[in-house]
Length: 79
Image (cartoon, rainbow, N blue to C red):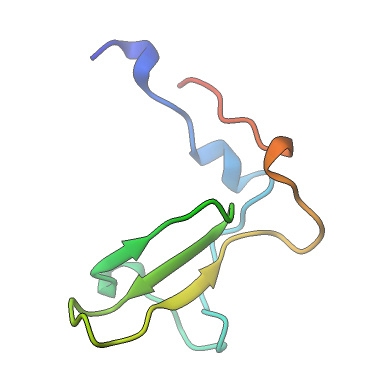
């Protein structure tokens, strides 16, 4: 790996994303209790499970700041 292979995602938290402490149901959200993450093309939305049970539904958390944001407005720079 080269130094240029790393991307700086931390800067997204200053701009279009916000590190949330509650989920969409306004319940306290603890990152290290999550065991399964699922990502798709919906920027800033993460589907997750707090267990590895295939029968449970995915919960959703949004890291987007309020307001309109399009995927083309986001640029991830090299670290």
